[in-house]
Each structure stands twice: as C-alpha cells, then as structure tokens.
Length: 339
Image (tube, rainbow, N blue to C red; front, side, top):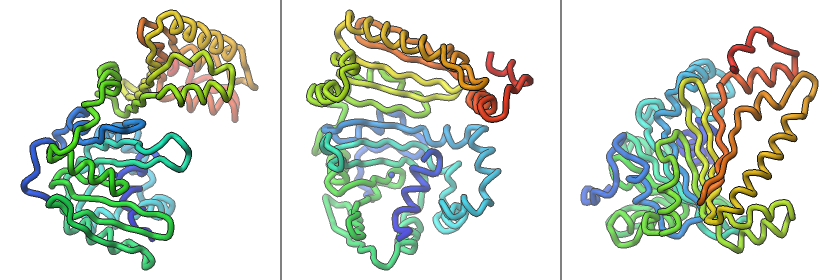
C-alpha cells in the first residue's frame, strides 16, 4: 500500500532519508517539548535513542530553498504526495511538525530489532486517520483494539506490520505494538521511562540535547566483544561503553560531534592518539586535485577522563567545493568560503 508509507515518509524521511482527554501532564504540548519531555515517554529497555528538532531543521534556509525548488518536481510528488497530504490533513510540515523522538529496541542480532517513535505536532485526528486509511492499499489489514482507554490502530501487509496511537492532540506514537503499549503505560505512570536507566541517564548528561539531531547508544560488553572479534584493529575501542553523536547547523556551518564514552583515561588517550594518526595519514591522500587535508583539518580529536571526542565544524560550502574539485577541477573563486 501507500499505506503508512506516506505517513512515515512524510514525517520521518522527507527531510533526511513516527486521545485521551485524561492524559497526564507527561506528554508535551505541540511545539512546547524539550528533549527531556520526549525522553520521558520512551521505554526503559532500548538499544539506542534519537531526537530530531524537525521544525528547526526543515526551516533552515538551505532546506527551505531545497523544498521550494523541488516541490513541483515529479520526483518530489511521487515520493511524498506532499501537497495532497497538506490538503487532506491540514498538516504543513514546515509549520505543524515540531519534534521527533525515537528508540531502537529488541535484540542486537540483525532482523531482531524493533522501534518506536513519537511525533510532536499540531494535527486533526479524524482528517489524518482518514488520509492514512484512504492511502492504504487493498491488501492491507487494519484493526483497532482498546488498551488502557486508548485506541491502538494496527496494520498488517504480508510480512510487514506495526501500530500507532494518538496519544493526545499533540503527540502520535508509531512502532511495533508492544512498544506502543509501553509508551501508553509510561504516559499513565504505569511503567518506567528511559530516564530511569542509569547508563542512559549518564549518557544524556554528556550529550548535546539542544542539537538539531542527536543519537545515543549504550554498548553492552558482549556487543563490543563481537566488534573486537571481527577486526583486531577495533580492539582499541574495547573500553567504550556508550556513544553519542550530534549534528547541528549554526552560522552556515555544519557542526558534528562523536563522543565515545569510556572510564579508562589511559585508553582514551590511546584511542585519541590512534585516531589522530589515521587523520594524519588521511591528510596525505590526494586524488586528482582533491586534497583530503582540506576536510580533515576541520576535525579535532581529543580525549578526557571519561571520553574521546571527535568534533568538526564544516562550512556548508566545503563538501560542494570538494566534489567540484574532484569532478571538474579547482574552483578558485570558492577558496575563501572554506577558510
């Protein structure tokens, strides 16, 4: 079906590549959420967490121009049915969708991972639900079930299935059924949230939760042992127990940070030294007129008592200029843009 494909694509993937009047105050109002407000609704037992400031991201000048430039293109229409979505639901992505928070759950093994996402937005339930059902293909089975005073909507098509619930007039939850039920339970204070997990709480305290996009994961020892077994070179990361990554956009620069958490200060210094050696070797590479040093010079690698940090602040023009150098030659007029 176009099924929830349109629903999910429009909310989750269009930018890059998720009713009850007795809801508790746990669920944030539309546009009033902070990262912690959204985290309070996510399950405790998860593999990773992510958060997107969707409204800020989609209204960046670079993204806004991209949308305006391509909104009438056949590819854009085929991908999202964007205008049809706006007309039938009343939801304008650039005005009405604010935040997206999600969690990866399940097991580490491939194909055993599940997920749940929460979208903070302004919407009209009946219009949105009608649109979802209308755009679902004929072989999709929709069912409804009552759960703790909520209606859970389940869909199934061949080997694909999922559920969603209108948590209140500002938040929609989508994912596999058990995770959706967990979010309902958390909203009613019948189940603990991710904020009660000590390892994740410690990670969140060291994560830039105000960034445009961030993700955090706690790495169990068995996972690190498996990674180390696949390549001896990766053994230098054996002390890492968590990782956080963020992307932000400020003053025409894309800022990104990868932080590897480890309580072994000596190994942290060794990791940073090794990564800086790789960086130095990479800076010596030159393909045609493409000098990797131009990019790698923007990357800083440092260590501390509890982490290794890889940080870069890259002018938005730099990737474009490097690609131009690789494909068409040296764009002399753009050199000043990357200083």
